[in-house]
Length: 224
Image 1 (cartoon, rainbow, N blue to C red):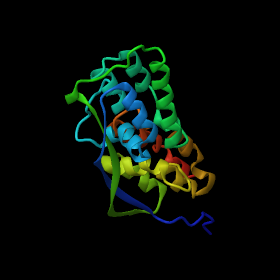
Image 2 (image 1 turned 180 degrees about the vertical axis):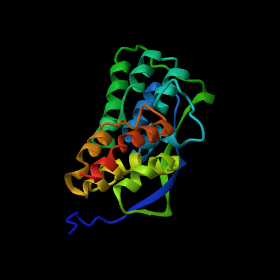
Image 3 (image 1 turned 90 degrees about the vertical axis):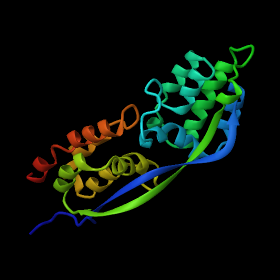
Image 4 (image 1 turned 60 degrees about the horizontal axis):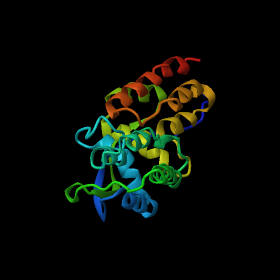
């Protein structure tokens, strides 16, 4: 008799991240700080995570739009470096991430007599994210099927199931860990390996490879 828990199939979805103008702009560091402190959280999300789903990696030197603008448009390289190393995956929610960005900027402003300003044509344009989700029609019923499939998932699927899922209640974890955990402790080692994958300082293609590697031991776990 098979005493394994009954788990619903894993529904593979794909997504696209739409960029929507908010109408807010910043020309100086002070204006950037003030807008960041009050802008909707979907804008904070877009300017940190949106680069992953853009057609090309806009600026490999910096990992978020705030750091890139501060570095290139304002020439404040020290501040740009501080903003660039902020890892949004380590914050409990977007409000905590917002607070960190504001605090970092405030600390830099305290050291400046005249806050830097960009040329008018180089203003920062705040945008917000809207995720459009597609059902691919694919269903997986066994963990070994997920391990076999992940290396060939689209980048949009990797983003949806591993990045976007982390901000979806109630679990606030990626879909891979959430689903595998439903099978009990059998795949606890794989769940821990996936937990150790940081989705931020990388590309989606590299992230897909890391997840495939993390899932490599599923077949052996199934035979236990």
